[in-house]
Image (cartoon, rainbow, N blue to C red; front, side):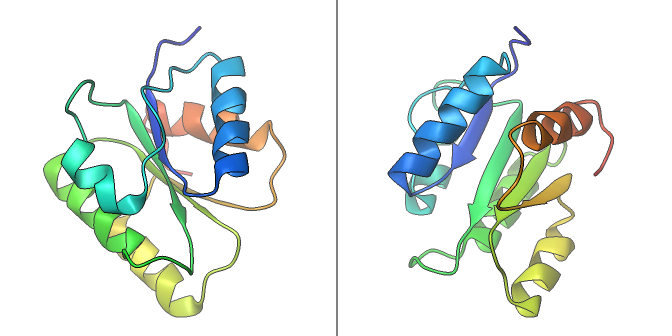
Length: 127
């Protein structure tokens, strides 16, 4: 067990369940439930400040998740941040790059890809 806590933002229940199982099987702690993007900033750090944030960038939803990630980056500039995306228009990709994430992983991905990227990000190696 690594003991590192991973907060991930994912609104789809089945994907959230799969990510929780994948992260826990890889030895990561998943503190609390996954939050919709609307709640991330208000809940962030109330109980435990995570070691890494895994943020799904979706086209749907009323909250701009790149803006949520930007706020996290401003409050916690050294915290690793990885984006997960299935498809994003070029404008969104450019906005993600402006935030300087420690990695971007595209769905679908192999279950071994995500833990490898998280390990690199936690070690300070931008992917």
